[in-house]
Every structure is written in structure tokens, then in C-alpha cells.
Amino acid sequence: MLERKIDELPAQFRTVFVLREIEEMSVEETAQHLNLPPATVRTRTFRARALLRESLSRDLDVATANAFGFAGERCDRIVAGVLARLRATKSIEPSDQ
Image (tube, rainbow, N blue to C red; front, side, top):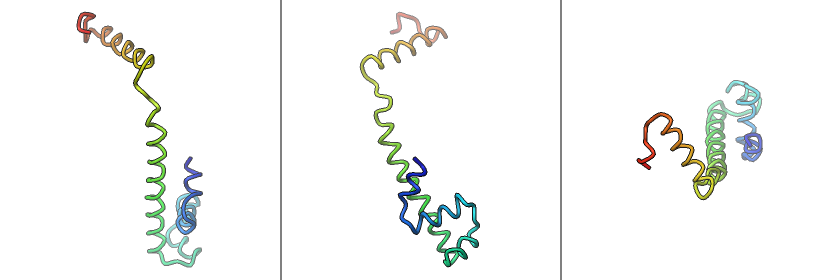
């Protein structure tokens, strides 16, 4: 997922991000390689990270929204498991249900 998201970055951010974070080039090396001022390299690295965070967050939010639905048979199984554990630790008695 991370590789796909890096590939989806706009070219100006992707290039700087790959050189800085993947190739582990310094700001100065990246600036020289791309003929950019060091401040631009820093800014693009920062923006690339922000874009990645936002994009990954959106995908993870969508992916996890229904990952642990709490209804029906699954819900009953989870509740029964929790109650069994509580009874085992004497936190509740069967009459407390």
C-alpha cells in the first residue's frame, strides 16, 4: 500500500521523497542532484510526507470502518467471550448479566 501511495504522489514530491527517504540522500545531496535550493527540498519532503499521511489515513479509515462490525453472530460470540473472561476472574457473577 505504501509503495502504491508513493507512486501516486505528484512527481515533484515523489522524486524528492524517494531520494530523501528511500535512497537516504541528505538535503544537500538531493538539492544538488535535482538542481533545487535546499529549502525547496525540505519543503517538498515535508509536503510529500503530509500527502502520504493523509492518503494512507483515508484508505485505512475506509478499510477499517467495517472490519470489526459489531452485530449478529459475531457480536454474540464476542459478548459471550467477554462475559466468560469476567466470570473467570470473578469480576461478575452469572446473576449480574
